[in-house]
Image 1 (spheres, rainbow, N blue to C red):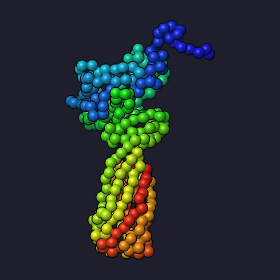
Image 2: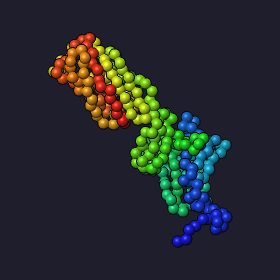
Image 3: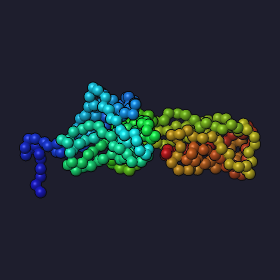
Image 4: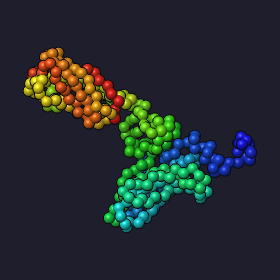
Length: 298
């Protein structure tokens, strides 16, 4: 087959040729910021797409107009979750508009991502639930395009995976890259915090922070509770806050410069940080020092 360049052939592009050319250069999404008012709401048994929205889908621009777009779904039948989408109607002159996909169960249908000349292509805007004749907004799933075309989303509204795709979560402050199946943290700074210690312990040095998906802990603590013996059950120091917990259980070591105890320190996926004492125990008023530890966060 000979090489083809539509412009050199006719000077004009068909809609299909325009999509093939423009989509790789323009991400899909609404234009704006995740903190904007939600694009979809419900009231009185109706689904309402708010006015003043704009977006891009497969390179085609879209605007919602100056008045609300209203859908009145059937409220009868078994409970279900419907999906509100922005759709490219290739079968109707490549028009872009909203639509409601009717679900059949308590999980929303997947967006259509067809590539054929008459297939629909969709991105999700919101999920609504219909149960017992009542319509409720379940979740907002829209993401947004920023000033430079960057994808802005919340942790609950990420776009689908695509190799090399970059996103910025405005609610977590993290930036990710997709491998095609997994999101990997590329930029993140969780600031400085500390491990909240259980009663019976007080801080000597307690530093917990997270940078680019890696958490770091440096901890020294003084025992203020009762004596701990080697035969004692595993002792819990505290629990890591969400966003700092490891992907898998890890172990590190420590010592007590006061008693000579050796420590086995366990950091669990649920955030629990605990210590086993070896050789000897620890008395009230004595100190432990844990080796600085780092791990990829879940």
